[in-house]
Length: 96
Image (tube, rainbow, N blue to C red; front, top):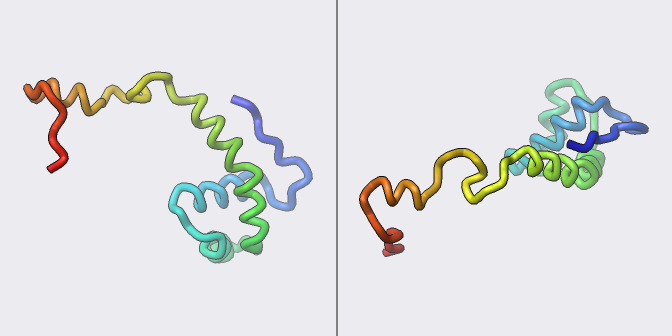
């Protein structure tokens, strides 16, 4: 995993990570993230949240992708074809 540099930023790394996580995980608007952070005592603007998401979001996604094991099921042991085979069906279910 490549480390993410938070040097020369106004907010501590925990605040930046939390703001980016709120926006990406829950599909919140930048203004919603701004309001949530304000409720916790962090005064920021939606524009600074947007800049943090555009700068750190791709790096976070890259690091998360590297943590996932390779394979069609992403290593979680649950695949739809396996489930269909275990249930006794030999073909994929119809979309009707």
